[in-house]
Length: 234
Image 1 (tube, one colour):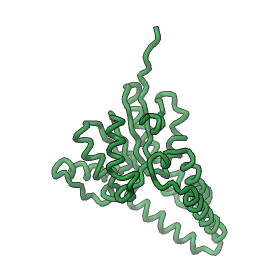
Image 2: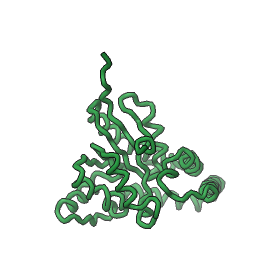
Image 3: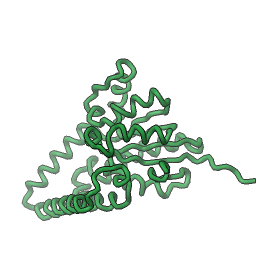
Image 4: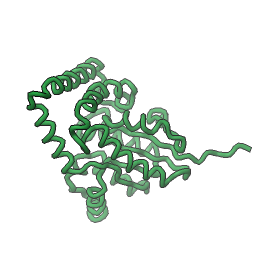
């Protein structure tokens, strides 16, 4: 007799942060409809634990989130927190970001950009950014959810991110691209492990730039069923 698998189904959703506010194809209403359609049991959100605690208190007390970091991400402040009350999914913060980390990263990048000994590296990075922008413009597909969740989107995005990572990850310490993603993943891994074999549908919601990195990290796992968002919706 075949035993039914009880692996958790994991779906990564790439968000576009403040661009959700004025994007006709991937606006807040579109994102809301996607989450409602997926009917998650658990949502792992790109919110730092300390900011989450504040935002959750505000949501429970007044229904209005004012916490600055969470407010910058309307996919959470205007969609996920209100939906949690309607759909009763569990919501957990899994972002390793800190304000100090962001400030340090900005300061170090500014120093690198002005360092005469790092000009070659800096211009290689600027060229990669320009190439990514050029290819996105050439594709001319906007930011609709089908395009954002395509492999082509990840490939183009990775042109800039890979150069940024190779040149500056060590310089930026905790704020480096690989370093911060590994820190995010450590929190994600802890949560996924805590729900092991519970047959839940788990959404991981991060900025679209992180999506490809996270999916590649999740693919080797044998304790989950990684499902593409577009496959889940169809």
